[in-house]
Structures are given as structure tokens and as C-alpha cells.
Amino acid sequence: DKLQSGYADSPLALLPSINDLRAARGALPLSDAEVLVPHSVLMDTEMPSPDVQEAFARIARKVRPHFHRCLVQWFHEGTAREGLTGLSRLFHQLQRYLEEGIFHELFHAAEGVVEALLEGSLETNSVTKSLIGRIDRVIKPFGDDVSAWPEAEAHSLLIDLLTMIARCESSSYL
Image (cartoon, rainbow, N blue to C red):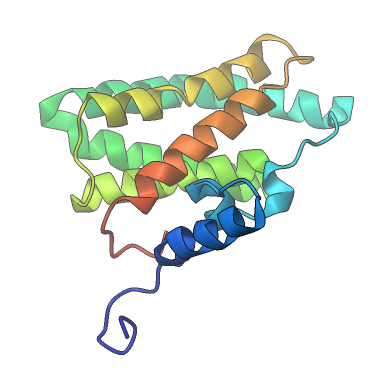
């Protein structure tokens, strides 16, 4: 009915019904993220090869200063739009470089949140600033120590980003 009336097709509209059926079977309910992200992304994965870890470390050392500069621009009222635009470009490049997996999905979702902020469908407040700022917890370990693999933080952050995206009314394809 909603599709025929011109409303957006949101898989989250089915979540209450899905969870009712799961409860009737005695299964645990699904979260927003489990409906929006492929199961393979949320599964535990093996540690990447040392070559892949080293490549991520090199990228993190280059990207992190740009990330911080864009955050500072966003936090200042006069340059907020430039900061958000820079963050969007940075997240887009990172997700394109990573191609697949949890970190690809994380930066794709982060780009979606920033696009929603740019178009005004999400409000810039302490929650959104904190959420985007937490991305540093994923980038920093790559540059500090090649053996650090912040997958648990990436999973948690991805779920939080997707929850925020699911609750906004955005026209962006992201």
C-alpha cells in the first residue's frame, strides 16, 4: 500500500512483523542492523594477512590528519558544511578502497550519515558528532600498531550508524 502511494520502500517497516514471527517460534528478535546489513558482514572474520594490515596502516597514517581536520571544520559553525563535505569524500574514498567487508560497510554507512547531515534530514548535535568522532577509534589502531585490528569497534559503530540512518527520512540513495 505504501509503495503504491509513493512512499519509500524501507525494509525496516517489516521488522516488527518479522520479530513477532520470530518470537512465536522462540527465536531472538533481529536488530535494525541485522535487517539492513548482510549476515556475512556481521559475522566474525579471520585476521587479514600482514600485507593487508600494513596497507591499512599506511592508509590510516595518511587519512587520520584529514579526518581530524574535517571534524574540526564541521564543529566550527562557519566551516561546518566544508567539514561535512570533506568527511563525505573521505568516507567515500575509504569504502571504495576497502571494496568489501566490515570496514567497507562501516565507511559506507558513515558516508550515508554525513550525507543525511548535509541534506538536513539528520540534526547536527552532540550524538551525531560523537558518533562520527568514534570513527577515529577504528582508524587510529591501524596506524598505531599493525597487529591492531579494531573489528569489534567497527561492528559496534556500524550498528550505531545504521540505527541512526534507519531513523532518518533521507532522499539520498546512501
